[in-house]
Image (cartoon, rainbow, N blue to C red; front, side, top):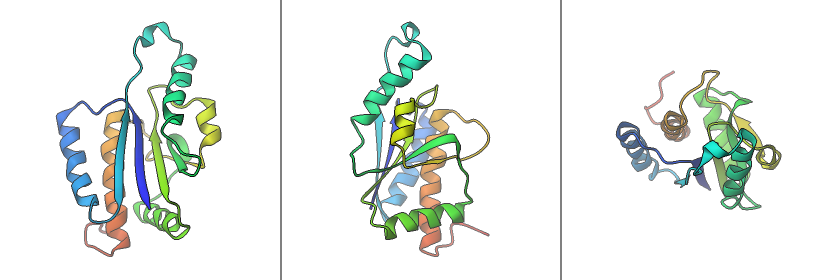
Length: 157
C-alpha cells in the first residue's frame, strides 16, 4: 500500500518542514509515503469562497485516481485514538487498498464534489489548527500508527 497526503499550498515554516522531514525519513522503513503539495490559487481576492473551493477541487481531482481510497481530513470526520487509527490503516492494508489518499483542503474546506468523491472523513481534533500544522501532526500520527502495528516502543499506553 502507498499513502499519499494531498495538500493545497506549500509548507512554508522551517520548523514545520524540519518536523515533517524527521517523520518522513522514519516512515521510509514502513511504507511508501508521499506528500503532494498543490499550488495555492492565485488572485483569490477576486474569487468567492465557493469559487475558490471549486478551483481547488479541480486541482485535487487531477491528482486522484478512480481506484484511490480517499479520506478527507475534515472537522466533521470520525475521530480515533492513535491505536484505533493504526487499526484503520491495518484494515486498509488487509483490504488491499493500493493507494490511500488523505486530503487537506484549502482555507474554506472542500467543494461538495470532493465530499461526494471521498470514501471517508477523518478528524484529527475538535480544535482548529492551521493547515500547515495539521500536516506535521498527521505525518507524526502515520509514523505512530506504524510503530504501534510493529509493536515498537514509540507509543506509550
